[in-house]
Image (tube, rainbow, N blue to C red; front, top):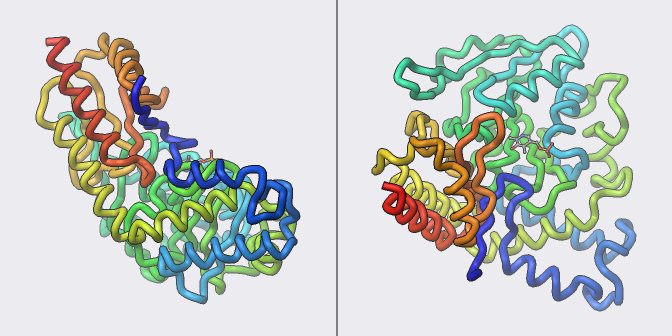
Length: 362
Ligand SMILES: *Cc1c(COP(=O)(O)O)cnc(C)c1O
């Protein structure tokens, strides 16, 4: 088998350059004679790396000084609980925009901690097309503690690419599968969170970017390791952080900076997505029913019009080194996740295979 391209939705592939660097310093990091994962998170050398990672992320995303950047445990789902615990005081409610499976799961979890107003914005039309109700028509509640949404629905392949207007209510975004993939204006958000295993590093690390004025109102029952204020006061080291994942994230941030930052990678991401959608749309062999305006650039689901060929497609794709293309079990079909680390050569190899497969099966 020649080169392998891994289209897994998460944990996802990491840049080869990052993996090679990590391999080279695996058992002897910075001449310590130890692996980075064997060192105290409070040692000077570790803290230096950790703070540099935060500084690099701040630079990459242009995060203003009045935001804290927290390196947390617990993944995206951990934040489904942490967000209401920290931001939803007794007597208030929060709006949850639902446009796919992750935003729905976030709303369900939040209901354990307070009053949640679920706003479904997903529309399925008679011809099968899936779209999103425009932001201006969302029935938002002006007294909500916050509005939660998921700009990129990883399973459904649906993206809300314009930042919603919430009329001063803090906006909370689950960016697990879209963080660092294109430029965003952080000042438009009260809080951004992302599990690392899609576009940042390995699983086990979760990034939270939170505006300082939202801290300090956590519910009494908030576990200390989920309390943003506690994390912020202790430089994300109240308890032992996921040290190796933090280190790998630091290497990914450096890699991204060397490539020219988020603006540069966004251009490549756009080209990759266009290449794949173009092949899906130009044939009646494949389809993707999502309104073009709301299509994800990171997670691209597609279906074979003849679903009886699914297994053959997956098997032959694997023989061509194209891995993990099977769609999520709840939507079926195929899904190509093409995060920052996926080179355009990988997408080119996929579309070449798709066109050959179509020819062979006709
Ligand atoms: C993967 C994902 C999650 C869940 O992440 P875990 O780290 O497994 O808890 C949540 N939200 C979105 C948008 C995701 O893509």
